Image (cartoon, rainbow, N blue to C red):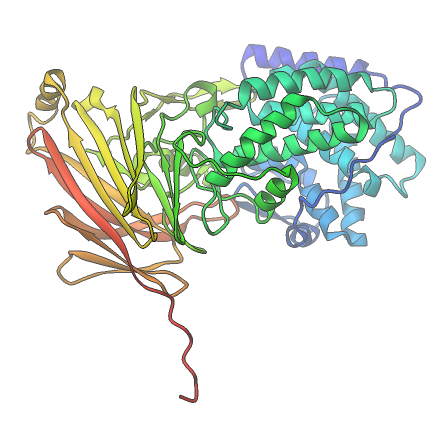
Length: 566
């Protein structure tokens, strides 16, 4: 920890030790119950199975605060206490008793600023849950335990009032401010926090939610979580006062973008550190907004989304984030995901952070995406670690300087033309991608090109290939692990069978080498990466341009079951 971090920790601990809660304290308003937890996860937790950040700890006895966290993400989720949602969703006497006991145990052990859970964003997340579930957790507590619970709520609210601005922009700051708002709405004598939180929330959404309904991190799952918190703030204001116009306006921008980033199977596109989203959350969040509509252009947080027939295609068509927003960002420019009805077909490997630092870094590389990678290089580079609060992040550097995207519709297909210059500084090459999804959604035609666009680029390319026969490149199409794939004997086509029984065929019209290779599918809620396959097209740039054409064609519908007596 840096010297500044140590000073901040002791400043916080001193302030919390000197804090004296008001004499007349109570929770005077209880938010409406929210269906944000999962009973199945609550059942696992009651049994002592803590499954967080892709890691599992079996601790059937004692307190969760005796667990030695296997990673920082696990520790953050534990101290954020989002698991209270799952225990309350389960709702059994045992679940509620454990939720009460473990919450009080945290309050007794870590009050006074001790422990790792005092980041402004974590404090907001935890305080929101402790207030949200107070109507379940407070009843039946003896007076001394009730006093401990209330003291901790007031202490955390006071801490947030002072430190919410330390939370990074985006989702982290939204968590801090939502906790601050609900403290002001719910705690007796703290109503002045409502006005403070309202001003800060309006500033936050006006700055952090763009005109396209996106956020700087370009992480679809983080946008979903931000939308959920925004819904909660709107509900809170609506119950106690007028809703700030800017918050409703932000909902109006976010909801159509979230729909554009949703595949036909109901899962979010997996880009820039985001997963598919917790089951049922996306539907609940969108329904709660009461806002219809879907963005259908290339401005849905920098993604181009096309839906035709049963097929959805979502393409990363903008530069990746940089700076503090890019700690989980990926070198995924021009990568795409494709889903047929309820079955994902082409995917990206996904976020690897839950599986440790090596998988986190590997998941960010271009080779982990359904895009073109050049000579072992990614379209953006992961930089050195820098401090961000109590965490350290590795931001993206050397990102593409120019990313262009154009869309057109014809009677035959929806067409996307895009390019990026991420390989210009190293090799003088620009990646151009053309995707055409037929109007019935049954055929995707693709063309990937590498070109040296001018004299300076040609000179740079000549230097890059001076000691080699051209520059090697690969175009990867990662397949969902639930698919089955086989390469034909001539190595000219790949048959891909979906769980529904539908079959797609991948072919190339060029002389590029076609192979079926191992891949992985990274999911935050699973303890290990899932084995998968990828289709790989390989070739070399031997002049100043190279082009590969390919097609994905749906051959047949799912076959109905055979009559056993026929």
